[in-house]
Image 1 (spheres, chains in turn green, brown):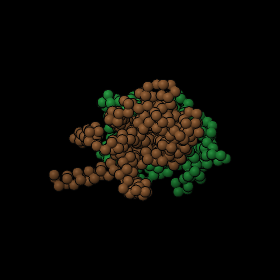
Image 2 (spheres, rainbow over the protein chains, first blue to last red):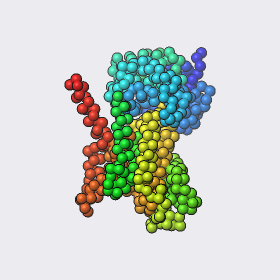
Image 3 (cartoon, chains in turn green, purple):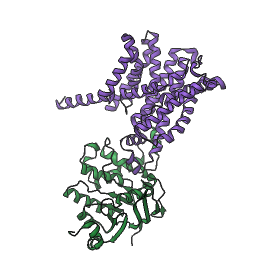
Image 4 (cartoon, one colour):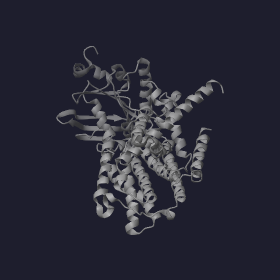
Length: 255
Length: 315
């Protein structure tokens, strides 16, 4: 049994009277791909935002490895090993692709950013190591060809891969990807699936939110289904596909 | 090659400026040049928070006032040498910037601008009404000058300080901190989600910019020998913002050019007599509308276009 990376226990999030997430529990192990699906408004993105620290939970606990992180600031969770991407493109459009990925290395550097103001340590060993790490990520995410192009000038599919690359640069133990296939065409979706499988090979846990069912079913080891903020099912893709409650709430008869 | 050229351009600019006291025959222009160099310091600081970080602060002149008054009052009441009080001015200003920056940097865009504008108004109100300390609107005169008021010597002091602080701004801009500030300007939400505590860097940029302003204020006070609250009003803060925009925000050369423009342009327009300030305003409005990337931005674009053409002709 692989090590449990993320353990969510009775997590709840309310906005005033609206209960967006109700007593949600699940866990993700190293090298596992967990799908989080459900109809629009079922609380998937809220869950990711609470896990990443963008929103405080109303109650419940989140453990990352041995650490309770539910009250930890967003930035600290990244250094603990939790990285994420966003549903819509959130990028630094003026940077080059390489610079953009390098920004993602902030939490794994051992020297303070402020130390780099001093003109003395011209080329440090750390800089060389970081550059090699960035090159590796660019290769993995098939961005090496366009590494020196400005982010604003690359295609929206490439931007989606760049978001994942930047999150990976922090060497996370778990990666949360929020609708990575939105707006991608078939061969780009294939490339995305290959990338996520390669990420899993690095013993990184992946939590993926996605509406494209063929992608989710082929990619995931396990799937958690949300409806109105509650978990209505959990299981392998085959189990989920056959679950009457899921068919009723989300997949529909045709699936 | 490119870097060598840039370095040579800076060296030439510095050498030209260093020769100014010999070249300028009209004393008034030397006076204006000293003011412009003080404004270079002011604008380099403003550029850090406005140009790089993307937070338009309207409290620049207020911080300048804090620097000017603290240096003057420390000398007056504690009888410290002018050297020491000038060096202490940015420290005092930094304390004020820490206290005001921490809460106000939580808000963005226009809201941040308005809050800092309010800070500037409050600083002026305190300077006007705390008469026991500041002598109110009458201001303080006979502020001690360095070297018995030698203009040439003061010119070189201010030139060296402006050069050093421009270099420091360049070091910050080229460092990882500078990269993070640029990232905050482009997408602050993403900065947080990749594990960078943006508030640290915003506060750093805000405090450093305030220290630049505080030093500029102290240098101003001991140059003019007279200060009153009006000098440090919102209008001056807007001049600092304009210096950055006109020169080219987010560049190192921009604030230098912009600072000389905001000091010399109103003087060069004296021929327009009573229409002078109207004309100045008009130029500023047109420049911001049609040249938002500033003079340095326009030059860079031109050089790119020219060198692009050169390459195509195989030259």
